[in-house]
Image (tube, rainbow, N blue to C red; front, side, top):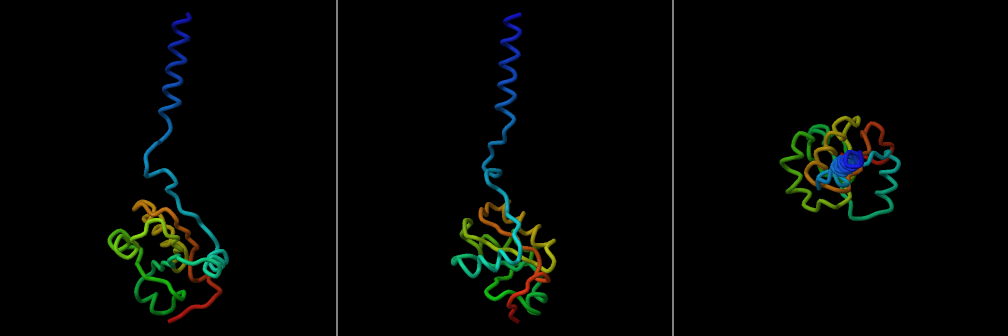
Length: 131
């Protein structure tokens, strides 16, 4: 009976320690959702960040947040490594309504970017826009 109990405990310990995912990809591999107001506060108080617009070129030309760079969401995997070489820089991501920015944030995380803040769409942006 004692051997059976010891075997049971050993199997439980093996199971418990093997359940954790230790892959590098998953360690901290998330993005944070913030509000447009929080994004604006960050822009006003910090330096060294990137504002990333993931809409189309046509949408960008109609008006965008000052200082934003454009990488359409469907081009993130191809263009981000060249245009955003620092994978630890703070990247503030937006689109029109928030759907594409969430997808783009997920793509950036999958590429190894570590400091992504997604703040939805420009339709909720109550601040300056440039054309």
